[in-house]
Image 1 (tube, rainbow, N blue to C red):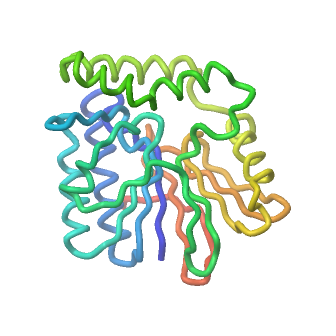
Image 2: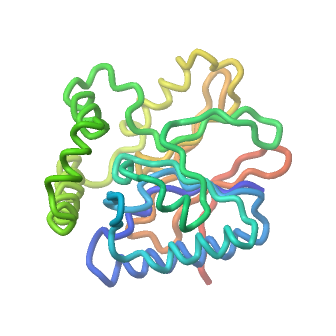
Length: 248
């Protein structure tokens, strides 16, 4: 079995709700690990994450410990970076034993060709400001200057402020049809659309499934404010299903 989840945004909200969300994720990981051939976390695990060469953000120790524990037990864990946690430098790989992916990838799972990733920075040709922002955030020069010139404490305060401002600017929970349309269109127009049978995305915070001419497209949804968050599971025959985690 392959398991998929995204958009936990650990660190978002007040301390109590953030802790509860982290504990819920840890329990989910423990539950699915017994049957998992691999676990895929598709980005925005953290509401803001930035690594320096010798410094990482405080907190999230329950999740980091669980990732390390499961990796030590032989569970294969893949993390795809999202637009809130793209600034990684290998800490999670070194200390937790996970594999970090910095771009969307095509892979073969249960005999099916699958396109996996967070879902950000795709099909944004008609959004020049978003293109500029993405180019700036991913610039090695900008990142080097930020790392050298801004103290980590100030950087984390800025990052948390930016994350909250970005969320408010988008006006809360999205309409699934509006939020997902661009990525469904991306799947339809993908150069290898006839070969890829399944696209799996996070990013939109809106769990949904669609069918294109050649493929299935799934959105995993979010964990913010969810007592029964949505996740995806693929069985040995390649059948993909969205489920809800009932921690009872």
